[in-house]
Image (tube, rainbow, N blue to C red; front, top):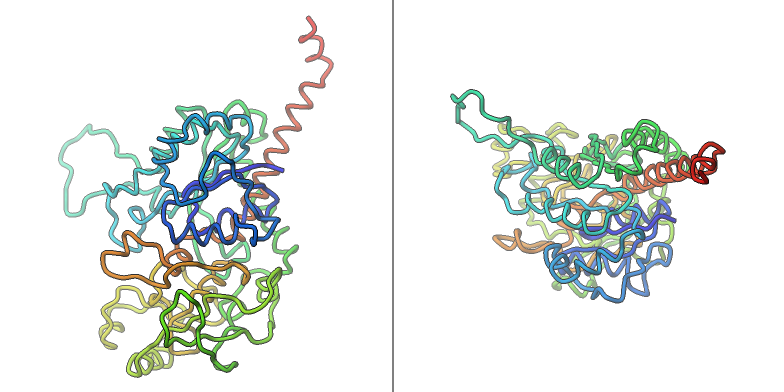
Length: 437
């Protein structure tokens, strides 16, 4: 059973998927207290599912940690893990790379990949997983500036800088854009997945690191079959049992929610995906709270659903005609997967009800099972958005567990093939003579 550490763990989507693939978590690092509370509740505490529960070393306090704090206080402890960690996973914050907002080259969050590299060098795991938005592979360029100087060195993307840094400490790295909807996630979410393998091991892998992505494609079809998912999962196939028109609403009793909110209930599961999301859970899922829309907002949303094309982002003219100032409004189409889920709750409208999605519905689109509980505030605002990670943000930033599960399975197969090749070489008669001589 491969063992892994998760850096920049967020609320635990990557860790959950790796655990579902059969890996065992040692510990995880997440700096935000709210996100870590969610992670701990589902992956660390005694009440969490035993199959997913992290081992957690005695020398590391179970709390929110920043990666630079970890390196400063526990570098020697990390070095003592050498030889005992198969996979180091982590996706540094992506806001500075994202095309969904303003790309900022000197955003300090962009430089966290350097801390990731330091952690790799300290632990020397067999393999690496790094997930980020596609923009990490695109060079930041200033706007409205013409370069008139020839012979200047070509600027590197942050991915190229990362790969070069990892190459310098002994890792072969390759990356590929992967669409989560191909792995059973009801969301068209394209992400850059980088896989690294230590050079002394990658030479034993037929096709090098690229072999992992070939295995990932094989795993994709196997996973869909094992989970009884027939191809792409639509928004309605994911969410129809959470529609409020089918159930009586009840008062939200979440202790972290102010009074005055209502929440829905689940109706009968009618699709394989809904039944999959219910496995392993008992009782009412948390984070089902509905937004309190004003009457005029509900009427506007109802007009948008009745008059606008669904399944595509509203264009500038349409947004102006409805008095909307937001850059991104996306009415779902019930028969298609959702678009990429973001950290803002009002980016996406329900496909048949004049409202935004609940945290639980957003989590369904990310493939979090219903038993997974989210902790902390539901939303935040103003300048707190850069400092806090409430529930909608936790979900939007997460790696979809079903995608992570497939990546973990493919990498486990690759590591097994490496070990088999090493064992075969060690057992060969030629090698035996050479060693004895």
